[in-house]
Image 1: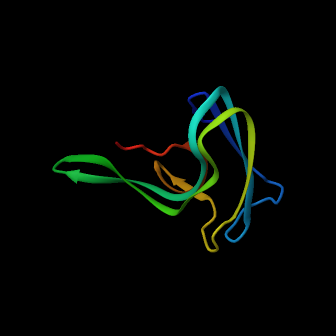
Image 2: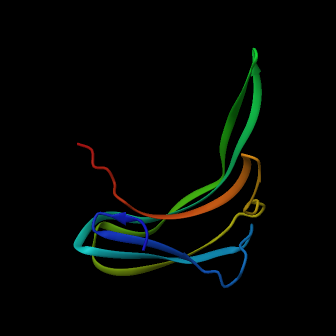
Image 3: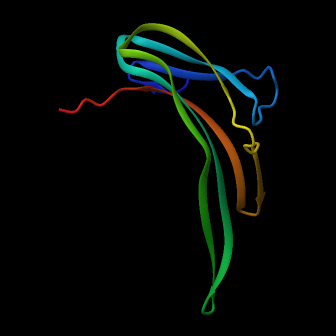
Length: 139
């Protein structure tokens, strides 16, 4: 299992039986929740899928008689969606749970890719996260 919340463990698996995932294809998997305490506070189980493009460019500048190596960084999000997989109503009792999910990847998103030249790089990658959410109570 992966991420921990107080008294619980979360894990995510992706169904790889269809091979490569691409824009327009279905992404299927399961979120596993193992609650070890008698109960934990949680309003919902959320799943987040996002893609990002990251770049780092190394360049040289001349300052007087010195040469300096500098770096420029950039990150932009290609896709970012979060949805509720399950509502708990405030608490989850001890036990092991499985929550299947399925959603369609948006058509036209770029595939995972990257290249490195020296210490400069370009990366497009995707991440899937599950988390337990609690509403903030304001008084």
